[in-house]
Length: 111
Length: 116
Image 1: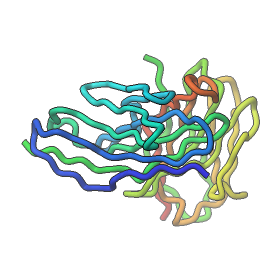
Image 2 (image 1 turned 90 degrees about the vertical axis):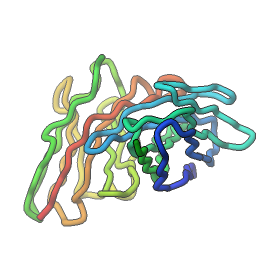
Image 3 (image 1 turned 135 degrees about the vertical axis):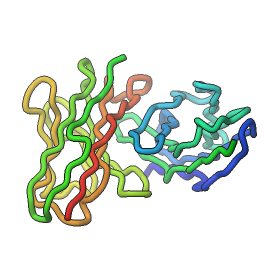
């Protein structure tokens, strides 16, 4: 079946540091890939998505590129802020099937 | 911007009691979902619902659970006899459709269920 693996963290960075959170997936079909963010005490918010190979999703300075050859969808941001502190979930949605989430990566950004 | 809403935000119940968690999906969406997240753990799929019937359910979604769309706007999750291990955050989600490009799921803020 489908699965998502991501670095579990926690990841602690200083403000303005470069962020990478790795995500790899296993899927039988041609999934869409997503990053969701969960701020403390809140629900899941869609951060970005990509629906096919080589697509790049971007939002709020975050980017992720759908790499079919490496089955990856790594999340990157060039300069993190304290307000980016949250848990980040990589997720996979395959046609006709339901979302599979990675375990989440907790990011803490220190001023 | 349209959003998924859930009520209540927090529900406390005694073990063995029935609870109903309510969700209002985005109005033109056709697919509805429930997920749960036990504190500090991953988000787990429970059930998906389309065209007034369950389209898929996980092993977690046993006979204690049921879902319903009682009217044109609400989508409910009922737990018939709650257990301690049902304590979790329950998220409702909806998507326009189920296929590529239209399958983005939008999540509600969640209901935190505490079973004592």
